[in-house]
Length: 119
Image (tube, rainbow, N blue to C red; front, side, top):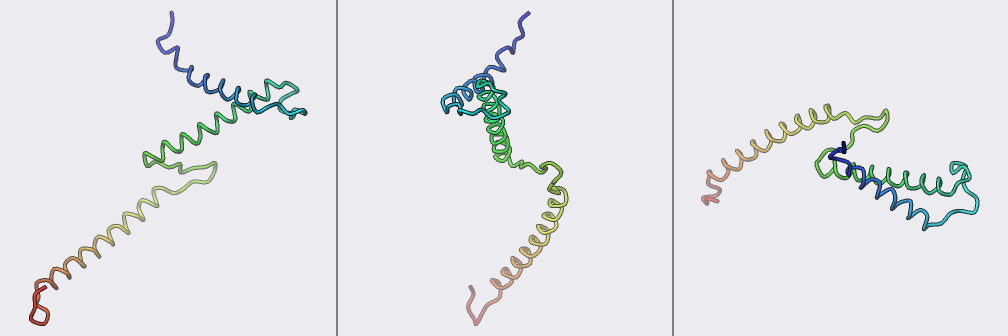
């Protein structure tokens, strides 16, 4: 029985293949690094995996940023979102009160004549 979603890994495999080809076109160094274990194809595959992972990370962060959701944790460092939201709400309430007071003062000033003239 063939699964209905057999094609789902094809874009990832195509991207990996394209990055392997890109790495191969960039050339192979005369002295291979130790991680290549003396095999040029493994070097190109490792380069491709790193490129795809980096590109995926950039796309993921960018896509979430367009939705307004930024990463809040990196390793053991975490941005305190709950505390920041509470501080924003508190400041927002204060600013709304100040704005209401200013609007009321302007309304009073517009109703009272200044020097015999109404503004």
